[in-house]
Image 1 (cartoon, rainbow, N blue to C red):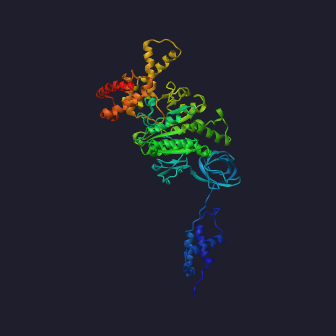
Image 2: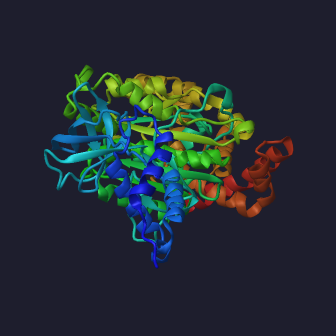
Image 3: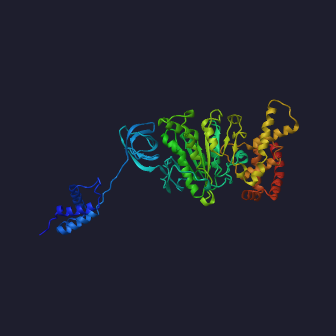
Length: 558
């Protein structure tokens, strides 16, 4: 005869066993009826029907064991209610345990990041469209900060600020995920900036040299070659171990596509990550774009690599932050920018550095771009960035309109690293060029007004004109280190004295080809040794003595 299970008796014993493990003041203690029902459900779910044929004593033991192993979990969720949504910003109430930069999930699946906390409200910037979000919707805090995927597979790809691919290639398998916000390396972890990063622009590499780990600001009005200067720097990294990151902040899609095509045509797209945020993206993505770019660059930094990152441009980034701040009802300050806009860019650019050997020896070189109005470099955002960076390259609209390209104003441009980041051969060739240019600018003013000048001053003016002609170059035509040294070597030793200013570029191009063809060993020695020895100078001078008369004769004849 089958023995039925006396759940009442077994439940009492199991309840006593469970009660011993519970605090008498625990508000979550189960009532007797609730406990018996849950134990019955647990037994039915956990044991096959055959076990129900056990005797009451055996079943009581099983139930007692089940009760002893019974676990209850309490989930506490931080939830809130949408009070207002629009223009990429949502205002919420509730969320008592939320913290800054925490991700919040909305009913339509879109996530937002907490950017402002108040006693009665939480302000969130949306990381996606606000379609489907309405007032009264419940939101939930995730307890997680915003992180993006990073890794080597991102090289050669076009992604948005959240790391999602925007090209039509295969999906990206990230190496890891990293927080977008990160504290910059400390002083103890850094090393001096003394290794050159060649830009391919002759006037920069000669007079305003950049070092790996430096932050050099590019300043100028619209449409005078700021982006071209930065893209040429990326193009000149072809064949080197430098990884590149280009961040388009609020740029038109057509402009960004043009940049991508130039990088691909120049053969450097496979070592470049392109982070794109367009004007029609939510303001949160435009705000996060530069931080996402430097987060991807820091992955290569921590791997001991050298990275070049271009922010194009931080004026639009500041405008986006002002837009978000006004939507969040933060009090406006100078020129309607919030008071923490300086901190916005300082915590970004401080992440560019060169690490010492104990920390991998990698570097991040930053080229932020800022747009001025009518050449005014004393405006709020521009002066902020000048004080943060290690120098600035100022482009002049007047020089650009006169046809002097790149239109770099030497008098107002400076690199605070200076010749510490120049190779010995380059340093020897250009140490007197800046003085010559300054003197040329001074005396050329008198010549413009018809002032009579003596023969020595006239020769100085002509030499300055040839030097200015030598420093000109077209867009997307970077010149490598060796060719630059050869050009400046010919200039310094007077081989351009009989060459007219309009003939300088043709002469320098033909001269470099002649050197590569007729004295390739000397050129290779210069490329790898980076020093102008006496033997090398003698060989170069002999080659120039042969080339220059032949070129002048052929050029004049043709």
